[in-house]
Image 1 (cartoon, rainbow, N blue to C red):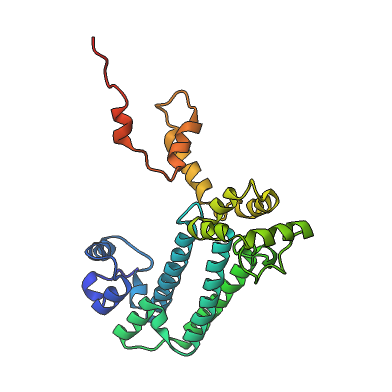
Image 2: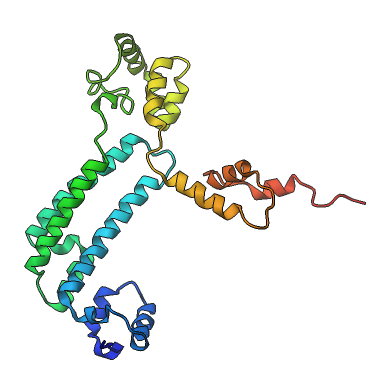
Length: 272
């Protein structure tokens, strides 16, 4: 197998494909000089590099979406639905951009094509469009749209979703009473959706319970994954007895303890 040295790899290729490696990218490429690497020849394959650049861009967009869905434990199904719907429309937009050769939307791919002064391969264009359409189909399958009949929970003071609300006659009567209460509308604007429905639970128990049935199920597995990783970290060979509930509660809490206050309330060592 031929191993290309760093000097024999065109500088414009290394700079465009590995823009974020910084100083480390030179060390990686030098590493290829001394160790057989089956993909070394790919650094001179423009079509392969175009695919790599596109994948870098699309995965970055997927990571950004994933982070926005996990950035808070208070994210509701309605917020998740909005973000997924936005991403689906972006997929359609990106597809049209690729078909019309408006490649600026994929920054790494665009920069690579500009720096190498080549056009996007027609074969790769077809593959990219196919991949984007496949992503859209997968998202539609994995993320069904939120039922319109539940939108009154997110917009209790709006007339728009009143008629489509899946509620009994008595519950709709209570919803009319709630949405004409101006003081509650002020509270709604200041508090989170979950906090609002918790506040009105005593006055509107039927509506509150229905709202919580929709809002409480987790929209992401991030807390489960964090719990497993935290448990693995806590449970080690130096702990021969483990009561994990209290420790996990601290690890998974979004509140940061006031360590100074906690330390000040404890006496490190009693006087003798």
